[in-house]
Length: 446
Image (cartoon, rainbow, N blue to C red; front, side, top):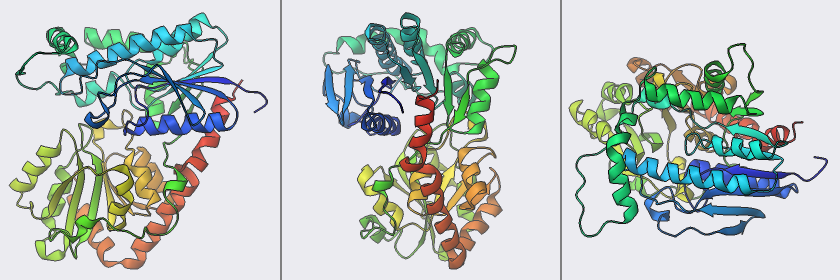
């Protein structure tokens, strides 16, 4: 880099929030500041999860040499579409107002939380013409809702005591926001949102996607009719190399002493189980492995499909083999992975291109062989094909999944080979040391 640049990153979440995008934003911002850039992050003043909400918005603070501007949001949570969109809308408005008042930035990098927040980055470019805008796409809206649906609206809300004004406003919005829960391609709402995407897309200077399928979706869906589109590249998400030193950790998660897991080969699913994930193939494969074969399927996390998993396991008679445990703190995940025989990642076919499983990177860092059940062409499938670090299977291949688990359990040399390949993949392509230099090229592009 020949000169200091002024760079702003826009994302609703930032540490101490625990969401993946918060930590990725912080990692990139700290890297850019360390190389001498003047870096600002525009983010929310409230957290993504309950433990980090309610702190109140701070105006400005400095973190690792980065100027962090925290904007107020009502922090209503994610229990309903209305509450979620109230938080999204308040951040979008606040970010736009803040960005149009900033001095000219050389580069504004916009993530996709909340959806369409790239509009605030484009707004800065409209008033500061020489700014470059980079879209860092973590997911694709409205495509993800059209494909996967949204059923986050709960039942009747019972209010006890006095409601905050923001909560009352969210309830008022509930009725007219309900169409978001059934957003369909070609409908009026979808058409309007796609028009916003096309408008902003024509004003972008660079697109960064998480895998080839996502890049193809963005370019194919929002490029102009004559084929013109902004330059695009694929840069995978990452974990910090320093957080995963080589070799096994000295401590293994205490939960492995549980009789449901002790002395068993553990297939580990670590993280959210959401609308973009399918568990039917996994539960059926658990049924193909009898209880005396010594295999446990450990799901650690939560999500909207959490109860569906429990129901399917009970229906198929494998509740003793499908073990559910709550989320653990990020600093404990390495100890959890240390006791697993392999990692499990699932992706629904319809989620290809609109989601990119982020749990891949930590599993590779831990040297876990990857069992993937999902469509070809995802970031996980690409990693397995490139590095030979696991087994890639399609949804419905119950026998293939059961056989892969048996072989990983019994064939230690093969498992060790996949494990070594997983760690090599992490160090060569999925850690900060490998990915951040690629971001330098994006930021420094003319």
